[in-house]
Image (cartoon, rainbow, N blue to C red):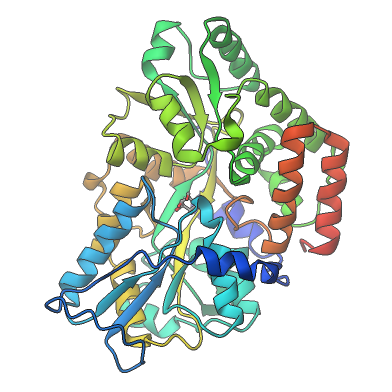
Amino acid sequence: MGSSVPLGKSRIDEGVQFVKLSKALKWGSAVAVAVALTTACGTSSSNGGNTSNSSGSSAKKVEIFSWWTGAGEADGLQALIKLFQNQNPDIQVQNSAVAGGAGTNAKQVLATRMNANNPPDTFQVHAGAELMSWVDAGKMQPLNDLYQQEGWNDKFPKQLIDMVSKDGQIYGVPVDIHRGNVLWYNKKIFDQYHLTPPKTFDDFFKDADVLKAHGVTPLALGDKDTWEATMLWEDVLLGTIGADKYDQLWQGKLSFDDPGVKQSLETFKKMLQYVNSDHASLVWQDASQLVANGKAAMNVMGDWAKGYFTTDLHLKPNVDFGWVTTPGTDSDFMVISDTFGLPKGAPHQDGAIAFLKVLGSQAGQDAFNPLKGSIPARLDADTSKYDVYSQSAIADFKKDSLTPSLAHGSAANPGFLDAVNQAMQVFVSNGDINSFITQLKSAADQNPLS
Ligand code: GAL
């Protein structure tokens, strides 16, 4: 796919040096919401049903915190837990997943617990700025011994280890790599109207006009949680200004007044004219489903949508749905990596370490990723276990420019992202580009990017 950038010289490798690693978390105000939303999704135990509620550190237990509850999300986690239970039948698992795509609610619950020194034993966190916000707050334990013991130092791409490291200390175990810049399309609809999957924004709008004229919603969007709109914009931004400038923006080296930023917002605003009218009440799975059932033709979403299509809806890649990189990004790979870390004060450290071992193992990654839609973070996974989409993603990851996702916490600190999401919610309804740019600048002033 496009020009190749050697892995060792990827944009992440360069960019991560400059990513501002920590800013004050701004989620403290969400305590009430967080308490209301906490949902322990289940406890599984293979010790003969003896599901003791003991949370004492002597109990053999592990509490796993994530946001993987829904369709396209839960199956991978369940496969991982199953494998863990097979290998550790005496450790009770408490699955404390909190519903809400991209951690919409989970991140608030986690912040409340971490700030109250009541951490889960291990939790899902994106590689990059999001993880580093916890590291800089002094809340995480280094995992170098675990990496050494498990022989992981050369099993993960170096730049991925860099993304979960600070000052030579490693703080996270990556379970997956998701791609964020994918446009999914309904093959039947594209065939029916003799459309070519768009490579450029011009292509996109040509296709979209044909679809609109035939009464088909061109682009499915479900931005109830706002991050979905932020994600669509970040892909448009990347496709407009290119990987170098995209990185410079999040490193605080390119002004939000850059004409490319404005142009990306004009294109994004135009795209919003082609989305389903009920987008504000739908979540990402709903939008993916519109494409699956032919009510819409295209959807821009991370490749957890592929997990949803294949694992939950039993659709076939290249038969029922097709994919291309989002316009203008055919040599870029928007990286989103889910990692798990070990917080200080984790009540069941042994259980947490045992879980991290499974999650970072070849077997763990190959149990999880084929169901989740992601590719393995490890370099030595068994590629025969992956479908045609994931095999192409594995190949692209090795040669494309790797760019960190803003919407999924890698590019910028949580305070900045929070502010961008708030501004985005307003932008989607009023389309005021200048005001949005002003908001971006003030978000960066309050949560510096470099
Ligand atoms: C991302 C996460 C993915 C997937 C997605 C939708 O932030 O990295 O694994 O869960 O949210 O919920």
